[in-house]
Length: 309
Ligand code: CP
Image (cartoon, rainbow, N blue to C red; front, side, top):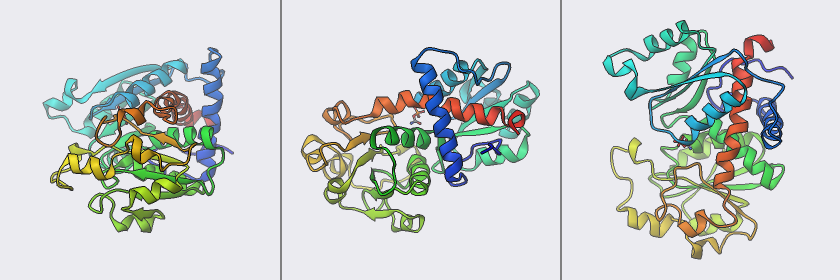
């Protein structure tokens, strides 16, 4: 199969074959990283620009390491230190980055649709590193990569996503990707943060944490995304933690081999107790580490797309 895309905007668009192609290439890059050998597939001479207009630790650093591991030149720009603070538009910023010779732009932006807008504005591959509550494709791909490593094939596996689904781009991207791979996805949390509408996207919607834990092969926890909420969606954080937080007592309902994921940043003592975050069933730091190989695959396919066709 050939890779026929220049940009990666979300998992809603991707076919099963495209998801599989990214994950297989990520496996190859992971072996290169483990064996400390330079990959034969690389981005030597290519310039990757990271344009992050929201805070990030994992995604920005992993994209930087991924680009460097492929021998690309990488430049990272944070919105606070860019001319966006002087009134320049996103379109003008992107045009200038193109004029400076970027071969791909990795963008994180608080507004849903910003990566799509840029992909229609400039002839440079655009990689979505999270746009508002819309999509976070590289995160979902590394989550799926980690799930496959732990559970094997995902068809008919029960994956529960617990927390603030409404404001979560991670939940949306995972839902698209996991459903395409045949998994059964249950979204759980308070009804204000897990509306029934998600059933139309193929999810099972539940507000019963204990029931959904019993069936899960994997559970992904999400933090409350206060930065995207203008009003409170539950009475208090203490009450949320009591009813929906994953603690040792509640985790006893899980199957013994069920794995625990979290895209980070984790809020210890809120959606996840420290004893769970640091438990043997937690794969949180493995997700982070897998983020490098998965992002190498994404960068390689997108930044090379004109040469690959
Ligand atoms: N999971 C995630 O996107 O983390 P960062 O915000 O640190 O990039």
